[in-house]
Length: 219
Image (cartoon, rainbow, N blue to C red; front, side, top):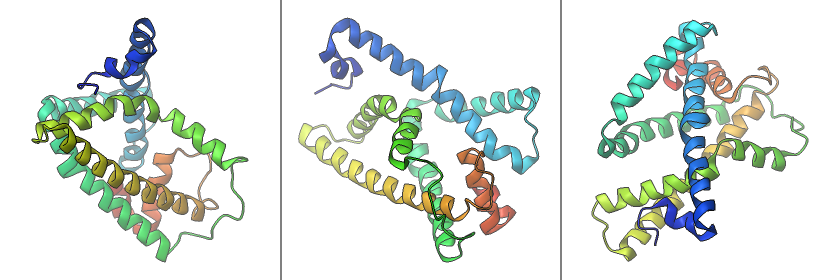
């Protein structure tokens, strides 16, 4: 129904409001929050591996290299989904699966007796909101539809079916990954500093369970 246009989705709230919302979405998922955060999260994981300091020079050089590589991999739009779907996503899923299975059978420590957050549900909702999932999903949904179209699903019924199946699979995998990482975090909560970022914590847990090679693979 949207015909691949974000404005067709947000246009129901009015033309001016739609333009403003679309602008906010693009600013949030591009220059203001998501893009810079992707570099910062990657730096948090890579820095311990190579012994990088948090100095401005180190961060600046890393950021420049990071975005040059990202541009090289994504400069051709038709290759973006192939790179993500055929290479990066399988590597990520296998790595997380191995990490979670290892953490379940040989946990780093005991499960935390009490949650560190006063309200787990509230904390989860706020954290999800901070991750820009709501804003990002508007554009990501259009990317998924466009990808399905480019793969030959031209009829509306076919497209709805393939998008529905892919959504169910993605949702199931996200639930498993979230619970798995939550378990790893709980069993290591007494070992690592609670103020550490999530990416740093995953790196430390991987190193604890698999040694330096684990941290290297995650990085």
